[in-house]
Length: 286
Ligand SMILES: Nc1ncnc2c1ncn2[C@@H]1O[C@H](COP(=O)(O)OP(=O)(O)OP(=O)(O)O)[C@@H](O)[C@H]1O
Image 1 (tube, rainbow, N blue to C red):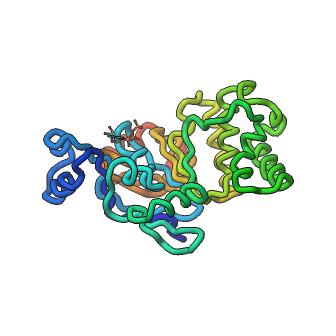
Image 2: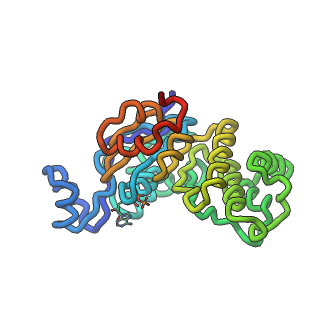
Image 3: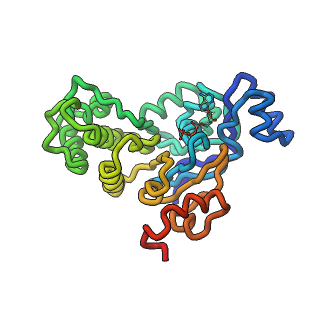
């Protein structure tokens, strides 16, 4: 298995005086103490994990546990422009096939990685209302200068998978919320980026549509094999789509493993609590 990311001893702090906070952390001060006394938030603390090529790694945890903060470290959005990181985020650069530490990577290089390799997918997929469904999906290909015939082929293939082939000439406002999310999903898979960072993309949807989109993401993934890091606070979503799940609490990863590992051998009471809700609903649970 190829490590697409290797994260070592990662800390992320929000606030002006990160130096002082890192010193306090090294002196053994707790996250709570630092919050109360120094008025800084440790959003990610001593996190170590790898993300393998072509897996869906789900980051799961309660609100405020640090999921989005950690996700945004993986394209340098946190820790470089907002907050301060230390440690290593070794990323396998597709262009050079070398590992680079995103924490120290020059800004223009980081921008290039964001533009071509590591794409962030937001909950509001941000469709352009003046473009049809197929023009929205084709947009990333246009930016890359891909020829029209190739664009049409790629767009139609993705729209077919998300069940919107017949809607290709319609505009976003003519589609339901769930259909619009599907267009966004198709567009995410059309980009050349090998890595998709997805922050709760389905959380605003009703359960049935959400379930369909989970199926569609699995189908798209089966075919296009991106490396996906997917944030959710829904444990059943995590076990359905995750190759592995990282469970976070208070900025730390409590456990990382396959859904089966986590359910059968929860590392602590906090993890066990998540697993209890879904007992009996999955076939590998006996
Ligand atoms: N830009 C920021 N400035 C200061 N503190 C921040 C910032 N972003 C997040 N935080 C803090 O970092 C901690 C982790 O927040 P984060 O949004 O990563 O959690 P989360 O698990 O994604 O939560 P949710 O599920 O509610 O989105 C929280 O205490 C939050 O208040």
